[in-house]
Image (cartoon, rainbow, N blue to C red; front, top):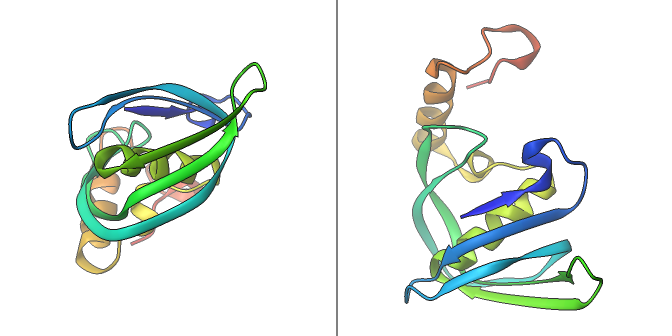
Amino acid sequence: MGLAANQIGVGLRVFVFDCPDDEDHRHLGHVVNPRPVAADGVTVRGPEGCLSLPGVEAGTPRHDHAVIEGVTMTGEPVRIEGTGFFARCLQHECDHLDGGLFIDRLTGLRRRRALRAIRRAPWAPTGGAGAVEA
């Protein structure tokens, strides 16, 4: 649904998206140097996963409305507003660019289960500096 540049080793504040909203309207685009302007409305806990943590999914709380501003790759100002699933995508990708993952938004049992799934994943580090803490 979205991909942040730092997920593929590119040190730029850019993300691309191809994501439906809750009305199944497709949003396709990109934003350079995005900054969240608003994340409001009701908080909805919905399933969320990530290419950075393959196979791990958890009910993650996100606001139902989000607005980000930035520029296009040609430098034109852009304001992107989303609701529902698209708002989730916008918040998720902005989190990536700020060094965060969806598991950072989890608490309690959901967080413990997600961290356990990460430790058990075939791609997980086997201890040491890269190990995930519970």
